[in-house]
Length: 385
Image (cartoon, rainbow, N blue to C red; front, top):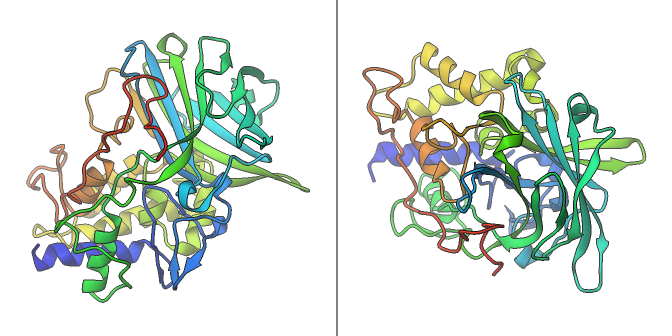
């Protein structure tokens, strides 16, 4: 790897910190905000959240591989549960927000709630559907799915298919190589692995997570939707915001630690302007800095602003008729979003948006590919390890 590429990796790792503490697993959205907490092991933030039941790892939206007339939504929560344990929260709402008209406000919401853990380790759950204004106030919904976690089929209505329980974490990334490069550049503390690109290793290959999977008939959705997931948790004062995610790694990479909690609590339709527009400015500043590590130099102000307008608000847009790659158009389990985001963030222009820039940035990818345990049929995520 060239010194410029190594510098780019080191700079990227700097973005993946809580204060001065390097992250052991700060990935697509795993442990993305200080309010979610983390367990410290030998000075490192370990891949276990103190509030994992409301910690969103990843969000996926894709065409069902076994039925082209259905759209699949997936939310994973509670990272590395086969190492540290963890269940769905009894006092947590898991919310899929769906925008049907492009205003970045939910017009349709599916909300999953779970009961206490039974002796067999499973939990009863229900999914309620809310439409129109009630997708925002979460009132007057109706149950469209009920069942036990890890069962093959839930009882459903309105054409919905639903599943919840423990699955193999579908996310893939050479995290130890990422941090190993950080150590090489003296910007962090190694936890193992080589510089990224040299003997790449998928850190997440053997980890499990909790997952909620839904399959919705396309006839109930417009061609283009915007999707993001949120969690809220109940306290004596009512429901409080927990985590929020649309596209992978937006909060993780671009917002400093001081802004991450604010970002998680700000609705997408306000993210571009809230707090004086600091979230959008954070993206612009980050893009200009990381792209300056490319041999072509930094994005111009106009180029960085154009990309920031795509990345903020943090909504995962999915169009059944679009041919754009993920995460610009949905996100399937095998989509290598890390390669796309490393490339674009460090100055690459794979879509040819900016005449004169090369397609490849300073960091084109991490050398790790998709898992081999994805299923071709519902619920699509691999069986737990």
